[in-house]
Image (cartoon, rainbow, N blue to C red; front, side, top):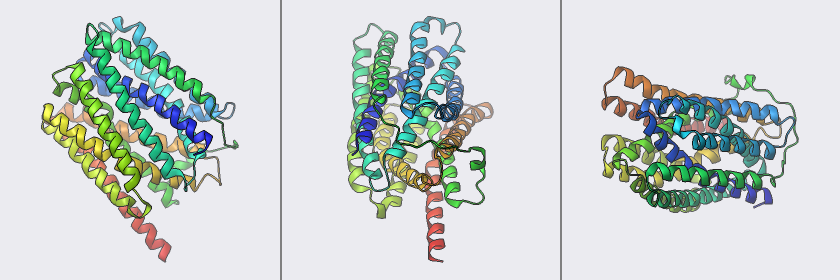
Length: 401
């Protein structure tokens, strides 16, 4: 791998340690203040509305700043969100709406970070090295997600209360984000900046490949909303609200996910990519369905094991296919316009999924509303694969014509 690729792997891994420690426990920590899955869903909607706006702002900044500078700026904003959560947590008991302020700031920083890292990942690799680069990054990220819940669990276990443990976790997360920001300064911006456009990219009539990229991201986003909002809280509830048991489960799941990423790196080939895609999607669909239908420790264990096994086969394949498709545009234009546009589409799917969770809860009583919402969002793992098979079959027919 090139120097840039190695640095990006390190930055991603450091970020993933911090993100895994924070994301799961932020949801649980904020859930303690609201006591409502649906308030947490609205928090997530605020956060994921800001992410594509962060992409848009990142694109504007790219005209004056390097991508590594924008990446560092995004991390600093994320740090400020955690600092706010850490310094003013006592206000959340009486003013739970402050969770939406956290979502707004956190989403903005994440948008800048992911705009930069996605652009650098695409520009620093090519179609020949991309599968190895993504697989290596996934392995390091998985290793990070093994370390993160283990460390977090130890912190919670040896703290006087779960809440005190969560505060210590946030302190460590801030330090890790600072380290990632410092390392990112060494990443070279390999792109020659040119003007780009955004709004014309929403026209999907004439370019079937671009339509495939956009629709796939939207479908992926609907399914992803489930992981963002519900799964961590459902697992936490299944453990009886024990922070240490919750962390133990996450550590075990992350270890299996690491092994699955090693397997995926060996097994996913160009000639079997679609079959691996379908295999991963089927596992992810069953994992979330069992979690909501069997809302106890056994359902949580099944979800964690099957999700950890299936995730690399679906998500890694999705990333390879999408990045290869975007590569075809990189020599013709400034790719930032397409990166920003697809992020709006991805988060549009996420917001639809989150809105469906609230919508079903409005008209259907619990626990049936939760089952319907999970079924709806889970089904998109299957839908996206069917759509991919249809597109690739259509593309093959066009090539033969």
